[in-house]
Length: 343
Image (tube, rainbow, N blue to C red; front, side, top):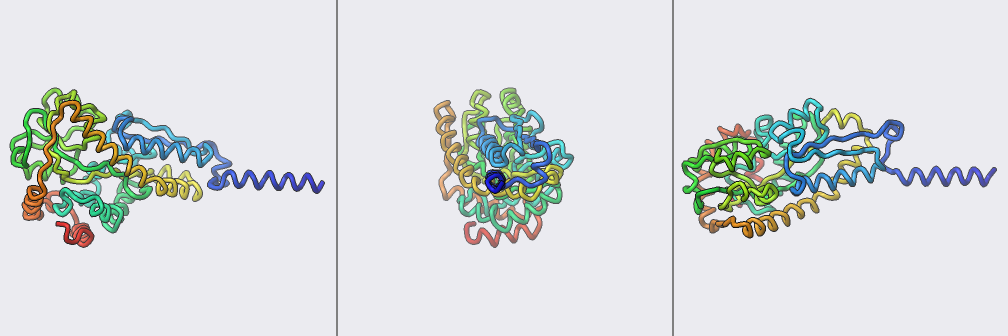
């Protein structure tokens, strides 16, 4: 009898150690299903990072959290996914900051002139620091979602054109320019005297090939993953106008289904992998530029003094930017204090 009790104890202990993250509720309930919406292609670094993350979650939870990822806007474009999060139509998304400015204007802080063509470490002091925390709190209330942790980087955003080679911001004057969304990007298009056009990303290849616009704002990897040289892209003005980020969020409706152990697991796995995901994005951007060049896209990198002069011009017009984007005085101060003398 003593041997049987000892065996029962050892068996129970082994079971407990094999499932350290599982709450009693999760063990008792059926599998918790998670539906994630992304509007970029499966080869995009955001998609690859999210797929990897959710696979790790499924493994660590021993299958109790089982995810399904919908790519290429199969469920929602990023411009619409926040509404889906609010209504519980999707459990997870990682929309770009520029798609959420209508709900939380302060998310557009990356468009401030002080962060025009930023050093990555300077920008991270903002996204991972007080400005990012300020934005996260607002988003969690407005989107009724939980921000998982530090933001997923996409990388530098640039100008891309089909017919006209651009070697200065003045060359963009009069062009029809697609914006991915956000008041800040529209302001910059207006600043260079372009004509703004907002088209959801999944619709860009067709619109571009049909001449709906002459150019657009995006990143090397986004252009590469969509093979937009096939739709007419020939030139890039690589001014690194802002550093793009995606914000990983889980809807409050989904979050409420979890015990504290599952919530802890989701946060910790993200924190353990975010730096690797950022490195993956950086490599993807570098590789994408080389691929684009091999497919006939030519790049112009403005010299540092030209970028500094353009930043100075934007700083002179900053009051108009703040008015148009509805940035709060608090976020402007937080960014200014965080960035310091960079500008």
